[in-house]
Image (cartoon, rainbow over all chains, first blue to last red; front, top):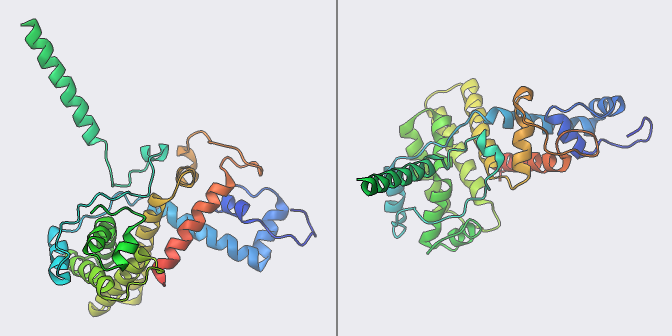
Length: 130
Length: 165
């Protein structure tokens, strides 16, 4: 954007500024502070970005005790089946999982399976050698 | 009957028992976490979680409403009521609300579609811990601006829904 054009800051660039990127120009920086609409949008995006950054310290969900579901099922009547249905979760695996554990899945089942496979292989090799 | 993520609201709204179980399976831990972190009490959290799901189940089941947002809003309201009954002051109420906001945003961040999720997680990481930038964009920043914006908009939407439906 250039000085005096009457243009507003675009949301995508404001989003980059909100996550800590430097504004693309001094004009952009000034306008995003002095224009009421752009200033409000910048603040709103910055607030949610700051909240998201703070939220990264949340490592896992807390699991409710089993009595919670039993209480719900008892009152709801015919909803007594245990809530272990197969449900697609909306998040996809990504490189980000390596640094942020959302607590919904973990590497231990895979590590355990590999360890068991190696152990079985060693036992078989040992038996063959013996 | 297996209920998928995209079906759960409709099955719930139809009053099918599988809908309640699926909703609990999907959001029970989120609601319990909101209640536990907000109230500071395991006993109150269990009660709030039960009342939240039963309130949604016995209340109007309008499929046009976002069920997760409605559950979080109910839990947030019940946490406030619990804190009031405990004599909590405004500062304590505000602190509980802030904690709940953080849990809600963390949940939305986890549920973001790719590539917004990965891009936003990288963009939010402290500068010293950021991996090599994944892409360049027209404005010269190291992150794709559209993906960052889409992610932040989704977080804003989820947060607003949890505060009022």
